[in-house]
Amino acid sequence: MGDMRRFAHPRDLMGYLGLVPSEHSSGTTRRLGEITKTGNGHARRVLVEAAWNYRFAARISRILQVRQEDQPAAVRAIAWRAQLRLCQRYRRLSARGMHPNKVCVAIARELAGFVWDLGHQVPPQACPATQQH
Image (tube, rainbow, N blue to C red):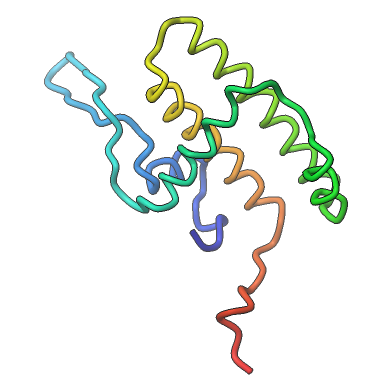
């Protein structure tokens, strides 16, 4: 998705990913529809697939703990806050009787907001495959 700093607000990233509802408006009537599905389909699909994991309780496995050791404390804090919030939100939306696919899209939209925050905390790194030798 490139440099996250090009998105001024998390809503801009969510719109780029097509995770915002479509709108049908006329006069004072405003109806929100399904997600727009515009923008980067691959990134949207990855976020929705990741959202399914929030149906489980928040925890940090041993593998994840080892992977996070080299990360800055701010990044680890954002990741843990995201895990707590998104797990709770998944349970709350499911308890309301919302369809599981809609729940995951809602979680993916919120996850995009956390990705935006991480993108603003950590400077972008050049991809090794694209570096000139």
